[in-house]
Length: 351
Image (cartoon, rainbow, N blue to C red; front, side, top):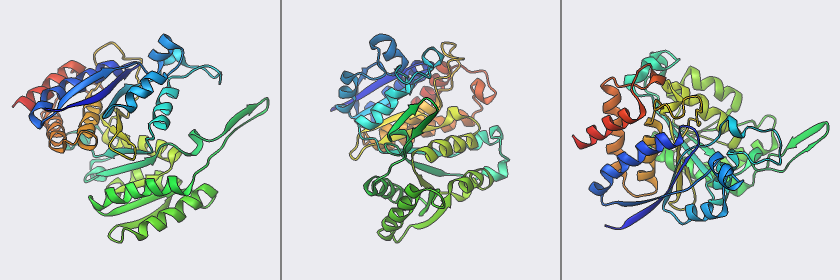
């Protein structure tokens, strides 16, 4: 049984707690699907700042680049909050991983679990049937453009190349071809020049995918439509900043951001997998964090980077069964702890 290498980055806050449960459930099913997993743990984010003075060391980046996949918990917390541009911030570790590993496509699936329809802030009839995928460009735009600060002004530059738009759009159209065949491209082409270039390139990519329908939507309208008719979306493709905002908005359709996984993919099979939720320092160390998003992120890792889609299906099915039986963590109105949820998922996998 060949061994695959996974770089494990627990990070800050609740990260170590939820990552531990994901590791337990993956270890439980990996041998059944021909996988032997070698976990290699490293520091990132605030934990790395405390130990090394930087959120991501060159050694950790090199170790991640040499792995088959990366599983990350969360980064950040009040201990490292600063507005000094010269001081390290935990988020720089995440940005450094995205840039250094070439992780240009961020995938966030949004599918409310039937057992949790009532936990959503939206009415049941509004979210029923929702199954959408946000594909966000991850290494361009405002977050990576030139920036600066002067005494009375500051600036952040949004830049996109045709190639950056094209490769992201290709990913989105391929994903839609295996789903319901619809792409919604979100931009601000009525105002921004980068959005006009974005729209031009998306149209060119669409010509190569005649079986996939394309619609364009301005970002402010998309924000409204996501909460008024989420079930009408299939695949949403958009640039970095818009995708950051819209994917968090879409996450709340499920009732808890603690339920949402994500994958950030490079051109090959390497991917970084992490829950959408943050480090939640207010509950860190209390054993009450919801591990489901991290477990589902591990399922995406099995599917996209480790070549084990059947294992991913099995893991997602176990989560579905646990939720369907009424088991809940505090964020969903229940009282179960992080470890208890992990035990219940393991019991489903064993059954």
